[in-house]
Figure 1 (cartoon, one colour):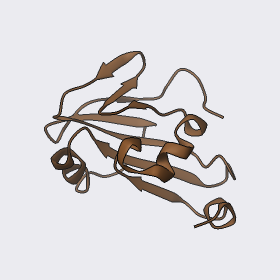
Figure 2 (cartoon, helix red, strand yellow):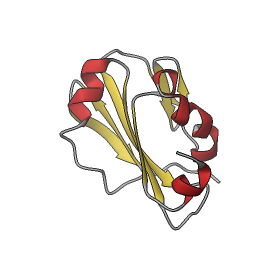
Figure 3 (cartoon, rainbow, N blue to C red):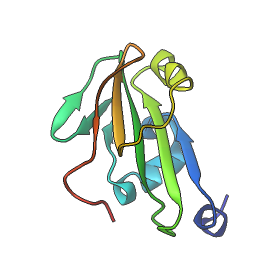
Length: 110
């Protein structure tokens, strides 16, 4: 897909940036902080192989569209996210398939 196609649609990324080159290219643009198998939300690092994240942001190519990221720190946790609904908040953190926190970040990503 090229930027024209991505601009005109909602975009869903599955997997963390380390395993998804398209997400790696957009990570900074959507405010996602993920390094290898460690993600950070609101200053707290989540490094357990049992941790996972659902992250939403405006599409950086057209803010009328959204980006959804579903990424686990392990393949199992990524698969477990498939059964979770998108949170009403900007993000939701899961441990072993159960939501442990959710909310909105304090800064808007542009």
